[in-house]
Length: 113
Image (cartoon, rainbow, N blue to C red; front, side):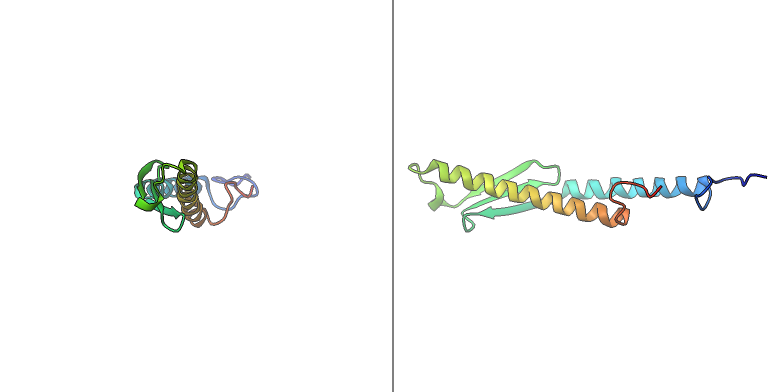
């Protein structure tokens, strides 16, 4: 007679798996919302340029030190803004990966079956 409430080779029953999946999904949604509300700031050029982005990956603020604004060298200022923005976005990615990895227990986005 077949065992009820489970799949061959999988421990537990389907109801428990569904409850665990729903719990994990709720936690992921809560963590994602918390990440989206955070702000990440990075600097470039020895703090001459400071960029703040949200967890939604939107630029919120760009702060420039007065001495970095040189009409003769706009290209350097552009490069510093790009560098600071990219570093702030990297911080968002690192935080997102760390939170999601902690939540999934290192599943790596897949399931072991």
